[in-house]
Image 1 (cartoon, rainbow, N blue to C red):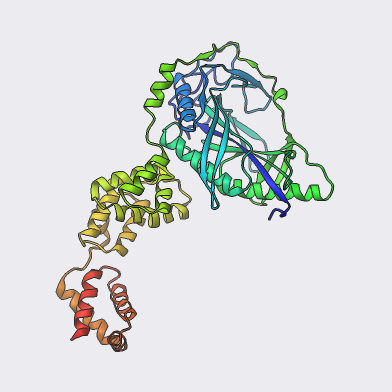
Image 2 (spheres, rainbow, N blue to C red):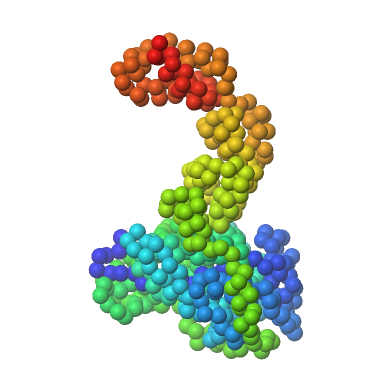
Length: 479
């Protein structure tokens, strides 16, 4: 825990890969997972004489992101060369934006445990991604894959407005959901398409001057980001308390040891020797172009959340969870159209689906089934074909091998027992074995009924109709 007399000052630089079909300055595809160095050309590998051509869709997506985060959109923008010499940068420079970014002065509002807070967005600009170094686990060397070189990015730079990790976590989740809703990025953190450079400094409470910051680059796990910030803030406070000095440097976070390690001195803007990209013309945007994008923006998370509160009477907590992911929210809405049971859809998403996603460390976008399967499952429960308990087993099977729920139920022999004669036979047997529970129920102990129903469900492996069991147990014990 950070000492009580210190506070954190945190700023984030979020990189989101855009969901365009081709790269930012060439026509190479951007698909993830291809064989190394199979999606490259002279432009994205920095061959002499190869000239870039700006992908117009990249500008459109960046403007969308700017409008969705309340930014001012620049009518006059340009690209710049950002020079640095890393082996994963084939040109020895990155095409980015320096003094004229596409979007500036935005904000995102978050709801913390104590109050609402606005986080300022300094700028959003476009740039090309670097390649990727694959290091040998045996330390024998590294191989470079340039498939990612030239994949379009937007960089969303926040103001240093964060004072704790809760704010960071809420901001990243909110920003991620906004980008998903406007469909400019799939934000798959496990694939690196949504990652953050984290700048951390500490200062004594009451001070206005910022401390010296360190930066942890390319972090793509919310849990790791939280842990890294907390460790680094504590480390800096300890150094200062012992009379030391914080060096401005780039750090590497090691998730196994839970510590940061120095990589190099952190660069300043002048170290990159920015200058206007001579091979690309300026970006001029008309009022009509910006307005057209604004008019076609889809419903954003806050608006959808408010609609769910009013239209479906969801709790604030449930609405936050469902609308926090476009993919969960779309599944919610589309499933309702099939089964017409908003309450049941909400319950399945909030409880079992969310639990399985957490257990499997999956993103909502990777749910292997859709609204037809979930809607059918809910309909089968409503009809009494299966119990809710069996429904949970069907859901687990849908995650493993998605197919028609009726096919799963038939294959597994999970059809619910709703035959009155068969149910009565089960009830009488359970009552015969649990005479004390009969006495307890007649003495006013309602939990005895729950116990008896539970025994019947256990004996039938969850197949017995629970409503019929309840009714029949009550009838038999009244006699």
